[in-house]
Image (cartoon, rainbow, N blue to C red):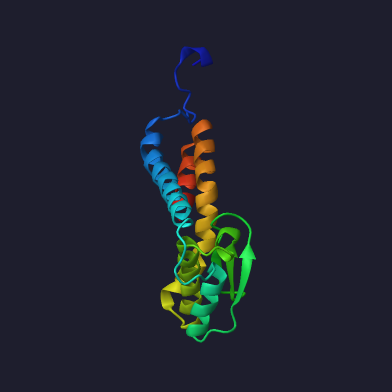
Amino acid sequence: ASASSGRNDGGPTMMFDPMYFLFIAPAFIFSLWASWRTKANFKTYSKVPVSSGLSGAEAAARLLEGAGIRDVTITRSRGMLSDHYNPVTKSLALSDGVYDSRSLAAVGIAAHESGHAIQHARHYGPLKLRSMLVPTAGIGSNIGYIVMLIGLFMSSQNMVLVGAVLFSA
């Protein structure tokens, strides 16, 4: 059959299926909503002073000291809400908005990250699993959407599936 006949010559055909959006949109919208809520709550509670007068870094230091942990360093990290505990280097990184701030949001985030350091020191089992999954989850959540969108525009079902799996991981 000729190419102009409109018949399929037996080769694979790829067509954009708008149904993909039915599956991708809820995850995308939920992710955006969760990010927005986190930032909105941080902004709101960054204006509420903490009654102790402690900064985020001071609160973290007190919590670690109270738990008998003296080998964790508290450092400053760049970016908004980039706070994290690294069990490999035993360092607790607090963002600029948390490190010096004496707000309820700052102390809450510092306490949360200190909790990870305490879990690590006490060999809390689920933290080991979390530590293994965090790098994969970071990669997947950052590039999963991109791979899915590229797959949609290229009409590649396999690439959309790979993007969905990356995001899900």
